[in-house]
Length: 290
Image (cartoon, rainbow, N blue to C red; front, side, top):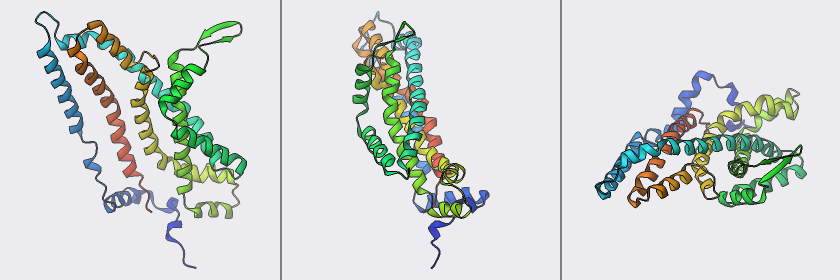
């Protein structure tokens, strides 16, 4: 029998040759890394923000404060809301990653009694709308709990974090399952010939190779999660969009609507753009030949 070239062990490739082969692979597939996520996107958003401020300033009254002064006045409050968005995204990503790893390992278990229920759970939370999960967690979980006789209120942002961690869990589970199954079967056979158990094969040989494959989609998922944290405003969490709406209500100036929300958009772009660029770089750096 002729050996299958797809079962060649990636770990036997010299480390120095991997970047060159990854670049050749990207060129062969026609990828345009340099054409994606250009800095001009950020300049376009900045110009949009300036244009919105200019239109709002033209519509403002003579004795009203300028748009720039108003934005600067509310920036500390909006910054508090944006930091809460980031806290929710980080905590939801950490909780979802831990639960997703456990669920992903269950999906590749040898026992069908473990594998099939975990697959159902993964598919349910992957396809459930994020906003519906937020509503369930906000209104089905208790608003206060009793610990050692003391009544402790459960903040809304904590329940929102739990609600957002559920779809993250399901997506991380699928990322792990796909990464493990993408490893050539020759890796498992070689480990079995060396008397490695399944657990040690997975821990010592398979998972170290999966990390590189999982990192780009995992970072992309975090960017999506960060932008999805604004859904918490619908359930009453005092994050960026909620505080923006309160600031607009306090100012009672309709012309400030576009400047404020384009200001929020600019903040999310400044935070997520470096993550997106790093994700694209790692995707090219750790590209795996077919």
